[in-house]
Length: 173
Image (cartoon, rainbow, N blue to C red; front, side, top):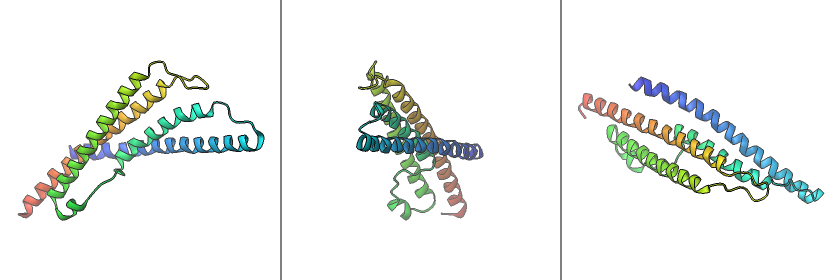
């Protein structure tokens, strides 16, 4: 079981990092388009009409696209003050508890994003009148993916804690 989880973890890391690269590239494109818009406004008095609408929709997806990689690579905030005092299984169980708390947060975030998306109805952007719901559906999907990845992180942390406990017991700790 642990080998299957480890292999799944490697695949998740690779896929989520690829997704994060695409999302980060999207953020770069958004930044470049914004700089072009500012330059055109300043020097040619010719803004990119409707860019704000596109940026608002795209940035939601780009930010949500980075969440799965954050969960997979565990770049979220971790406090290890107590964990550094506890050695072996105790520290690993504390890590598992932290991963579980992160999973709970991500589950609530996903739930609230879904509720918000359902409340959008047929809203559109102000200038181009683009529907806003598809972008938020994409963000919900990416956040749900990040939550599922965090669930795998919880399983890996529990497996590591159980393994550390078995090792500590073998050593007579």
